[in-house]
Length: 86
Image 1 (cartoon, rainbow, N blue to C red):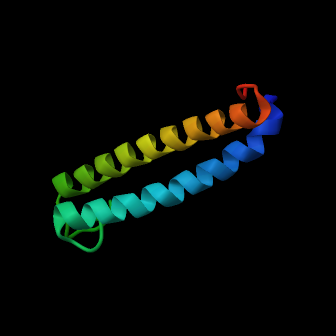
Image 2 (cartoon, rainbow, N blue to C red; image 1 turned 30 degrees about the horizontal axis):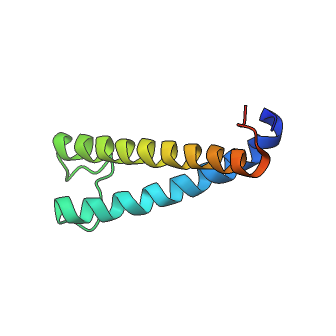
Image 3 (cartoon, one colour; image 1 turned 45 degrees about the vertical axis):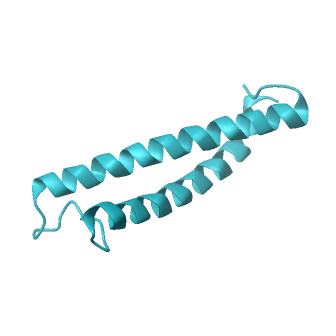
């Protein structure tokens, strides 16, 4: 499968990964911080440490989910077509 043919699949998988990562982050934040909402970077009532911790956690979760979804998509394409997407 050519890169151009795989591009729409990759975009859809990226959207799905972002949605899943956001849901996972919200649940993890509730469990770890005991707070319903993660802090916004411009929330003046939150401290630097809390804001940066939330951002780091969110970034890590997004990266792991995105890598898993991308890899799974590529494996799925190989199973369907017999070729690894380029």
